[in-house]
Image 1 (tube, one colour):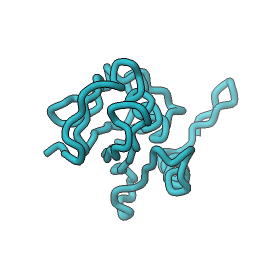
Image 2 (tube, rainbow, N blue to C red):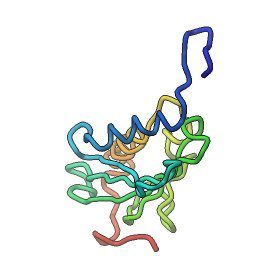
Image 3 (spheres, one colour):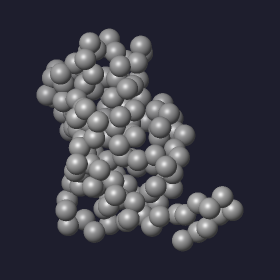
Length: 146
């Protein structure tokens, strides 16, 4: 562990991810986002799944979006890779494959170690409701990326 002059302690990666898993399993906020391990046998805790329920009064209202989240071994020092499985039209998502584009999504583009998987999902949902995304025409409901 590293002790800095400010008294900060770096928590080991797996402890951090176990804490995130516990939070995800308990449910967070109003239930509009959720997440958990894709494979419980993944001892490195790299592959996660997420769900976002689209915000009300937007083109996403009532839609359920599935995502894959990949936390490489350098997480949380570096952001996870995030990909929508459910087709979505958003200015920060590559329409060809569902990848969230870090340079177009502030949370991934300006990643901070205290951000979590929860932060990514909550902020993606907030981005859905932003003025640049809230009224964009959406692909057929239930369609997914290959």
